[in-house]
Length: 254
Image (tube, rainbow, N blue to C red):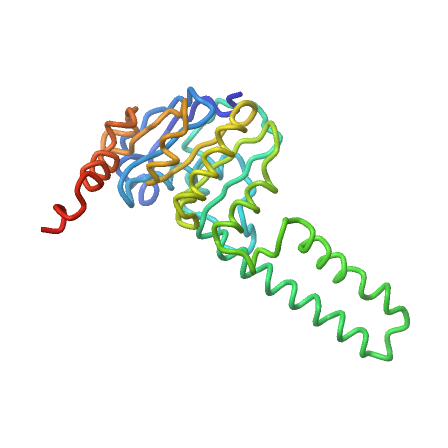
């Protein structure tokens, strides 16, 4: 199921994001597969495109209201049009936001427990159970939403737990370099989750991961100064370099 089929740039502007070469050169991009992989060097514009899509779709983002949204992409969103269908859920995941979110969850739980303790100790509160209710609800929601305590899990386990808790049929999901929180084994587990759910959901990933880029049936687009260019997996520079390195690591350090 394709919920976003095309993004078209209808105008230009000054500064970011139009100063990014791949965005400056961009005309339109068609999404033809349930999974699209955006590849390219750091700073090439992969994340910028995701931020524009997220702004156009008003996508929920990890830590919404906790971490700053991409203001430049939001301001420029009127220069882009989407050909789309309504998805049940639009979500933007990033490893950086996830780490900030874990910290927010820990702080929020601590504040809720402190308020409950304060109410218990305050003899001037007539109905203590009623006064504690919003804080108890907050604790319950945060402690039952996931399979385990995110703060006590490894970043990889926590990220997968968080992702799976947000994954629903009929969704449109954007992921910005999720491998930043994941080992190779966890990247493989994530790739399986995406592949299995791509039957009725759509995913666009910006990644350097050779594992995520290998998801069967994925369309690969590489960010260049001439725009986003379709590539085959074996044509990607990072894949060619990785194969060269793995053939003989010792040779690469001579």
